[in-house]
Image 1 (cartoon, one colour):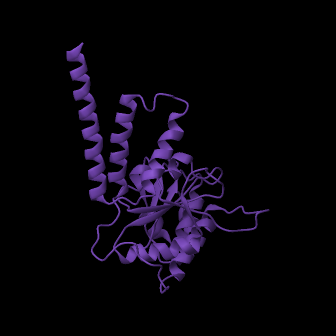
Image 2 (image 1 turned 45 degrees about the horizontal axis):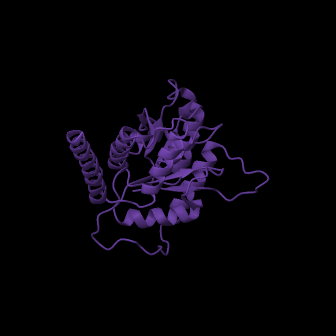
Length: 251
């Protein structure tokens, strides 16, 4: 099992084909597309795949990034610029070693790649656990989509027999929660933070939400820990409502 390759809002169908070709060169077949153009499955995509047709034809299409990564335990986001978020930064090589470690634990994982002209949006990056940056000539570090996919996929393939980094979980321990479970918790928490007025400043809300999400992403929470956090939020809300009723009675 290798990483899922998630292309977020790809702009050209031929780039989907060349990315699929780079994937199959390195034994990867799980291609996921978020919001592609209506004509993404065109003859240009198939021609550019140059024999990797089955990867293109087997691609799964999603409306949102959150849906595309919902079943994954760990996600990397590729970016070439500073996003001013507190996140671990990997190179393709160090990311591949980490992926091999979690693959041995049976976890599911993937790498996100952004649109060709602009890259991933900050809201997409905030859904990832770790950022991947390719160390290249600082005076010219421009890569096309297929090149970036190839670099990450190649390092995964070459890391087949590495000296794995030390694992952080004991054998049999619960793996990190899926992104779907984390997203449900974020929805719950942000709903209550809106309700209590914590996120009341509209122009600051997006950054505050991303910072809160990044905080929890770095913790690599298990499913049980996410459930505990749901319970904590629920109890805090219940207590606030109970205290509110008591104060109303006193008045």
